[in-house]
Image (cartoon, rainbow, N blue to C red; front, side):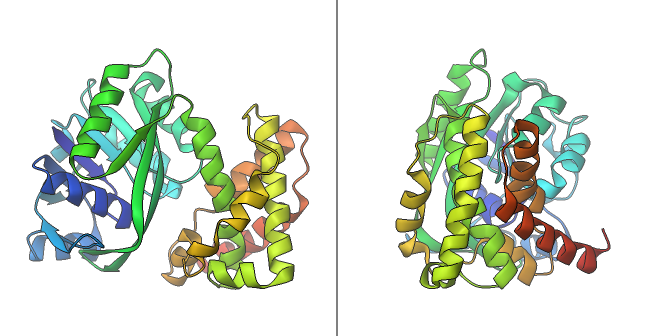
Length: 308
């Protein structure tokens, strides 16, 4: 299959490299020093628990290089979803599917507005990887897996199965869900519990787990988000937040994506991880005072850093 990776960071780079290694024609959309390193080194290097390898492909910053792709792995930060989707529209053929591997539960709605709901597949992405340096992705923890599903029950289920098989054949553990938004809300619950707080204190997950006050704050944030999800009609169980926190000990050395972005001088995915939950809560009449406080503090930091 002809596959396009839109956003060749740690996530897009890792999965794109696995697909290239499996024999698929992969076009990597990248930019800046990362793109220059990919071209200079004639490939993307992966440091993996299952062995290091280097994958080839087409490395470009030109959207017109994606005109023949059958499947897009949409891996840009949620802060760039609208901008990138709008630039992609003129070049993507009507038969192509878009699989979003992004954080949050709001990117699907944005992508559906540009491409049509029936073409959008969504993935809950479980991977801990970092850009070690330009052109090099390091897998930090193992295992890595994807849970994928279609947004629209009228969508092409055969395409969903085909994509699942392609990912599996590339050594990517993949499962298909009939309710992908429920799965993504569960992942969002973990992200919203740990990401904003870790970014605010600039500490790893273990710092939150080991401090009684921070642990209680994280639990309150999670409970607020859980009530928002339930208000939105997502059937999540009551004890899920406690379960998430109790089972997070193996991730104690993990630097959350928001913390990584902050340390690397990049905009944080503040709106998709925090802002969406706060705003959805207001729409539904669900109070989110603790999350809203953390969100406001981080938003002030972003304004100071980027002037917006």
